[in-house]
Image 1 (spheres, one colour):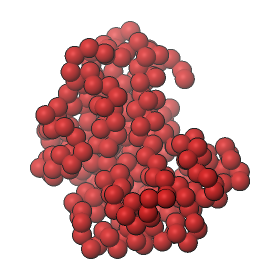
Image 2: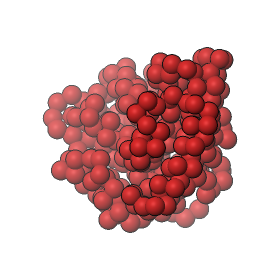
Image 3: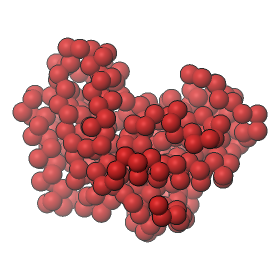
Image 4: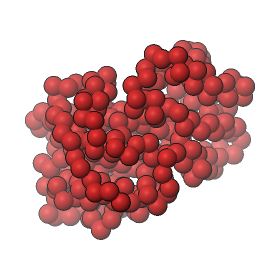
Length: 276
């Protein structure tokens, strides 16, 4: 890792977190769990979600620039890109002029290769992420004998953002996507979109207990700790809080956050980003 230490950065400042919508809350859960003393400033672009199958690459890049710029102006000490789609651009392309440490989503390569016994691995991701092939290339480079089943799942994010939990429509989509895993006898599944842990239990019911489901968010949180410590920016005393901002429908953001976060440690506000 390179050292991006800027002497003007205050270790007591919050950690910025960005995502296309509510998916990054699953990463925020791990971040808060691993670093209870840290404060977080989260931006979820709910007004323009989903990113992975509804916008061009240039549009997504421009949206990311807006969120990074907003966090940079608010004085965060680092940025966690809690979105696989945005992470596909690479952290060096996501600085947008700010001298801040940046952590992108872990690809989960070591996690899936350690978990699989048959080397038959499924990957659920947005069409954009699948198209970038970073997960495919990383896993195949680490183990050329792996057999990957790459499954684009364009319907998951709209259903999660639309709170379709428990619906027949969601169950049908889960069955549709999981059929690819059963057909290829996958024993491990990588959730390569931060939204997907919201429907982890629905996926679990379909694939059965024998399939190992990997969420790379835990490794992303550990990567964040490593960068903070390397730059002497980690805060270890006190009780942290998270300010969660969204670009539309704050009530929905609060409801979805309530499914996985301790709302007693969170506050919510709406944030307006300029139309592009």
